Length: 158
Image: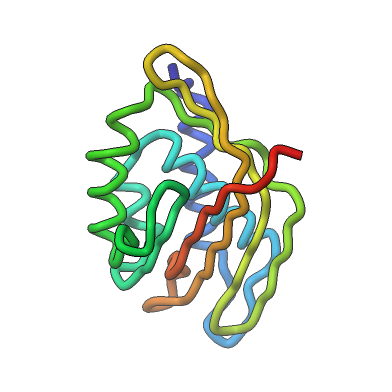
């Protein structure tokens, strides 16, 4: 069961990520990129398509664990439909661990973040988890940062 305080924190993180990024002529900060990642994790775990839709570019390309190149989601709509109809339909709960091994690259036009996380889930009453390497590429669209590319690849349990 998701708590109200977690949802409130997610809304606040999303607001901060989308409203406090620097003007187009300035680089984003590492903290603003972290806030965007946190907003993505919280919205995904909450299975909140509306919130994810505000974070992801309409022109995005996403390849997540369990997808082959033929299943690459091109565009925000494909990503949301895939997760609504396949992934979220099979799980009762989703969590992400705190990112580790984080690397952030920043320019005025884009930000790239790679990190490790553990995707936790409950499916059919059974708990499981997947260690993942995530890569998100962010770009500005009409002054708002959006996720343009995303990748989640399985990594060793180590």
